[in-house]
Structures are given as C-alpha cells and as structure tokens.
Length: 189
Length: 189
Image (cartoon, rainbow over all chains, first blue to last red):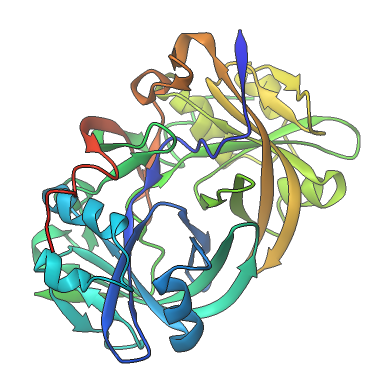
C-alpha cells in the first residue's frame, strides 16, 4: 500500500558535488549542492540548480563558466561546510584549506584535492521556481591518477558522497550490482 | 596529478529511475534512465533528459505528464531490461510482469511494485543537444508503507540503484556517513 507524502523533492539519492566559480574580483569560490544531473550525451552536458541570491549564481551569470568537482568521503566535513556558509562572507578555499586551480579550458577554478573534476562552459540558463538551472557543456574531465582504472575512474576509489533529500543524510556508494545494458537481457518477451 | 579524460558525462554516480508515460492509445510505457536530477525546491521539480526519437519523448510531448519511479535493487534485472528495449516495439509492463497504476494527480502511470513514485506535470521542455530535457513539477510523492520510517522513506529500505556512466556499472547505496548541514560546522573560519 502506498502513502501520499505530498509534494517533495524525493529523488533517492542525489549525487553531492561542489561547483567552482570565479567572482568579479577573480576570487575563487565553491558551493556544495545536490540538485544536479547529467542532461545530454552529445555534447556531454551537466545541469545544476541554485537559488538566485547565491554567490555562485551571480558568478556564473558574469563568467559563463564553472567546474563540477566530485568530492571523496574523506572530505565530507569540508564538503558539508562548503554547503553551509556563503562565499559572499567567507573565503571557503581558505577556511577548508582546499586549493583552487585555474581550469585549462574554462574561466573557473577546480578543487585540487578532489579526485574528479568537470570543466564546463555555460550553455543555457533556465528559470524555474526559486532556483535557476545552469546547463553547462562538459569540455573536459580531469581525474587523479590514483582513482583511474584503465582509462576511467573507479567509483570505489573516487568514493563519492550521496545525499538523501528531506532527511538530509549522507551515504556512501555500496556494492557492485551488475552491468548495465546487460543483466536485463535474460528477460525475454 | 590529474589526467585529462576528454569530454565525457562523468557524474559519479547517477541515480537510476524509471519514467512512466501513456502513449496516444492510452497504453502505459516505462523507460529506464539516469540523466536525471532534482532541479527546483519551491515548487519541487525534477528534470530528466531523453533522446528525441524515444517513445517516452513523444508520449510526454503529447500528454504533458510523467511519473518518476525509483526501483529497488531486487528489480534490477527488470530495470535494466526497461532501459534496453523500446516501448514502440515491446509492452514493457507485460514483459517484466510489473503493474501499471494510473496516477491520482497526473496523466501518467506509475509502477506498483517500485517503492517510491513521483507524480509530475510537465512545466518546461529544454532542447539541448541530442537530448531534450523535461522539467516536471512534482505534485505528489507516493511511498510504500514498508519503506517508511516516520514520515519519510528510509533509503536502505528503498534500496535504490546507482549507475556509473561510461563504465556502465550498477552499484547500491552504502554506509551512512553523517548529517548534512551539520557535520561541517566544526570547521571554523
């Protein structure tokens, strides 16, 4: 039996990412968020949403670029902190002792200590409700040597953080379950 | 040291969802996808992207509504199958022995056997590259009694599926890591 829970943003779970931008004074900023998803294959694009009053919002409106950084569990306290305070008031790189690095391809900084980084140029801005959605084209992905397995990152080495909306609890990634576009083939029609 | 991997959609990991729609003959269809994310808080909205040739795409263009169903690990084979075959050729509900239920609030079916279901009305359609993104307002969430813990679903009971893009491997949700907007507070400025 299903119960009605009302209108809530219950995607279970969401990824947790840290978005990097420069402000108008070239100062690097980072913001943690979970309203994010891949939104196109060719070209590869990612979309995330953020409130219009946020520092990251005005930075992207001005600079038309951002990075999406995927933090590891070992930086979960820094990641949570980056989602609590505002870049208008605090230098979040200094406070967390994380290191900003200028992207090769876009006008935005990435987080040196995080294992997986997407360099994105702004393609579209979509006004929704209390949030604006930024769609960015992923121009390059950079990964630490230490997380690579052949030519792609190993998710257990990346060790990312997941969020459960409304309960606001973080979880890790669990066991390997199977191969996509493969394990369903045994269901015949 | 970071290696450049080129332009790839490497959000690590993505959620896995099954989108429910009716076609022009009122036949229910389902499609598995991972290019999805929450995109607004007030009102709560979810966005997903799909190729323009897909059955789900034309169904949403016509019916302006969809459900987002979160499958459990125990239905991973059905979930994978629903992402392999086309609803233009196969009755995926019949093939998987899953049960379509007409939503209370929107013109779309949900999957009875899946523990968490979002009923969505189409708000905006965004043309990106090879995919169109549908933004839906979440009008209601329905959850099985069996996954509820107080008033919200327990993620370990929902037991959702995660996807790692490019390697195309499925994973489960792992250990509890901490409370959001809380564990970062010990970092002082």
